[in-house]
Length: 181
Image: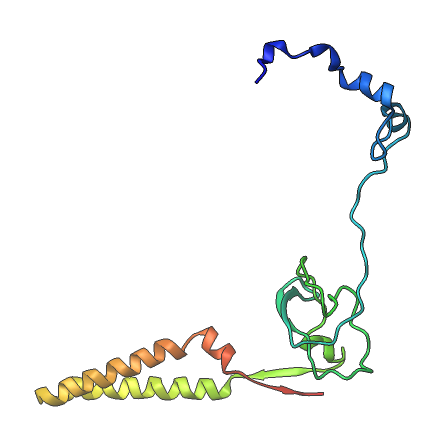
């Protein structure tokens, strides 16, 4: 074994001197040549894809008024159906901006008129209110303790049902919609 101190350091040359003496390697270009020309910026490249078949995908978007809306990519749409409106995402790409323009409203014409009807829900609520009044009257006149408890239970049930049904959300969910023209 030879001690490190006895190693000849005269054979080691700096890297830049070695490159000048031996020439640049095949994989690298000389520094002067690389610095002389501007570098091309590295950028991503967009490669468009073929439109895919509708897959039954739902997505959130906004309608013409900017209101949130759920759109549906109908797989049963005919192949010869008209193109999607501009701004609608393609079938295979997500809609990152939330700006979809095709959905249930995308299929109807501008001259169609629809009407919502809440008469059935209103009748149901009126019926419950009348039942509540009747139970309250019977409760005030009843003297039997067993019947009182039964009437209180029935009244509590009707009040819970009224609380559940007498609001805008329930009305919207149970509105019947029909096309006028």
